[in-house]
Image (cartoon, rainbow, N blue to C red; front, side):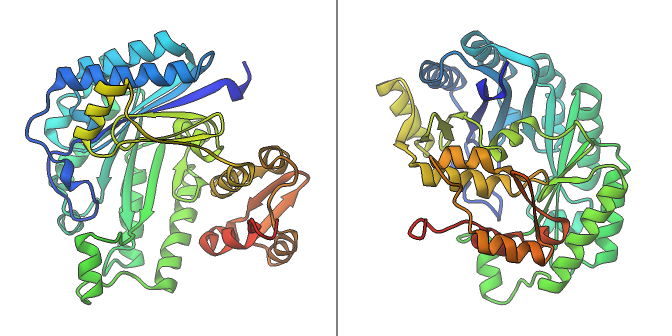
Length: 384
């Protein structure tokens, strides 16, 4: 079956159990949720997408958002059953659920696995208690590692994430933490440098001078050490911040980076289907009311012009070690791939990108400078 026929499904569960200092979903904290109403609404939203995307097969499902591991397993099972009925599952379908590594959530892992989840993505975020406190996490290192043990016992595949380039973090400290992480025997790691998002407590502290993260040179040293250490351990970077054993890459996230169609349901969920961009209403109550009124929670549905589609595909695909197929990019653009050939030649001469036949990729040397390289490579719409 052609890969273009495969579809990814993202299910957004917006509710958090506690506030955190580095995201903007704190308005979604809820003490109680009408689970029956939410299950029915998610199934209705799903059915709408299935009508818009017929004759497809699901290659992956991802339950993400606030605290999706606190979704009732019966709701997870109902969504998966409906998704399989609407589309059918591809062989080896990947069904991922994000989870916080708390003992409360770990106690639910077996039931979630029984409901059909076969991959867990755990938000460990750090293997240092002081760092977890700084990040506003409720779990301790011991609790997080205990949850990881449970996840590895019940799910076929497990990934976890860590955040580095924290205030005061040295290269030696991060290298030690990364070695500890690799010793846990995981097949996939997501390793992110700390970023300061506008409107968060971190942004306020940084503006007031109370928070200083490693500067450019120090951050570069941490980035390069991360890639060297994971590669030596057999988990090379296949995307800017994601590392996996060959064959264990996130099938769902690859659908995004390879610019394949994906359906997004639930509050705030985005999607791409057939050249259309979709966005659900973000506020939970507004989304719920929209589903009751319209049979779906869509707030925005707009066509993407060829240049935008090709540009999105370039920006996503160049994050991957494999790079992009320029023939496909040109097809999306309806003619010529929107790349700046002069900039590519210059960057190729500097060793930052490589063009081999119809593939363009960012080299290992260029990965460190990706944010600076992307706007140089992609040709502006006016100049196209």
